[in-house]
Amino acid sequence: MKQIQRDGFQNRLAVPKGYYETDDMIETFNEMMTQLETSFNQQKQFVEDASHELRTPLQIIKGHLNLIKRWGKNKPEVLEESLEISLSEMNRITSLVEELLQLTKEASAHPNFETENVDINAEISARLRSLANLHRDYMFEYHSPHKEIRLNINRFQFEQLLLIFLDNAIKYDQHNKHILIRSTKKNKVIQIEIVDHGTGIPEGDIPYVFDRFYRVDKSRSREMGGNGLGLSIARKMIESYQGTVEIESEQSQFTKVIIQFPEQKF
Ligand code: ADP
View 1 (cartoon, protein in one colour):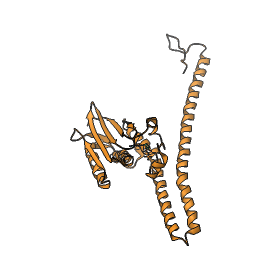
View 2: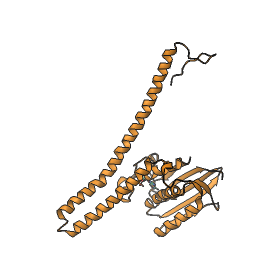
View 3: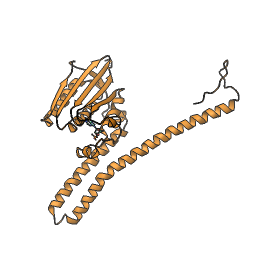
View 4: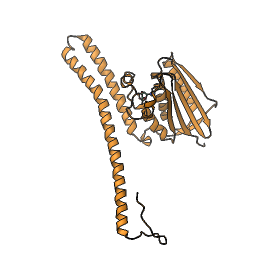
């Protein structure tokens, strides 16, 4: 932006006053318009992407309803299969809509939004226990040098965060099935690491995985029930607590998620 010229003694606009003031206002106005335009284009892109994601399951359901209409009465096997597929696509739409709502919602608008002094080590252990029950063929290894680590956070959101990253680790590590979790507290920073030894992420894709709807392998992610929104929801949540999240990965080797929160005083 152009500097308004001022005289050195009285801090007034230098002559020709009218010209510089107007010039500066126009530039400020143009900058605001550019920002508005960028934000409008981002919203537009978001609506386009969301509509595209919703269209696919809707088309599949429509196709199967037509099959049922045509063959349903005489071929019970067609009826059964089409109903099953339609129901599973309905579930996909429901989860997508829920995730979309979550992305647009402000953290404070959440009905259960109340922060509390949470021992994140106890929360991680509890989550891992229930996941280990569900996925008995996986090994969940958890280390922390501290008995407890306290963070002021909404308990429901913290659980959700863990689930997003652990769910990805499980989804994308179907071979080694070995997931490592660490939590530490050092130099006023609380750090949680989640490491899996699965497909990994190609180097060129790493910068984009937090973008909405970004998936390295779209059909594979779809097969696993992914919508490409988990990481963007997680990052938004982490940033609302002044935290950061990064991903390090090597294809076919490992993926490491590093979450950091500033330590608070209690
Ligand atoms: P999705 O629902 O597709 O998993 P996410 O937003 O959670 O969506 O992740 C975006 C993409 O990042 C995924 O589609 C996948 O390609 C990649 N990704 C995320 N986590 C991992 C992981 N642990 N290992 C390999 N790829 C991952």
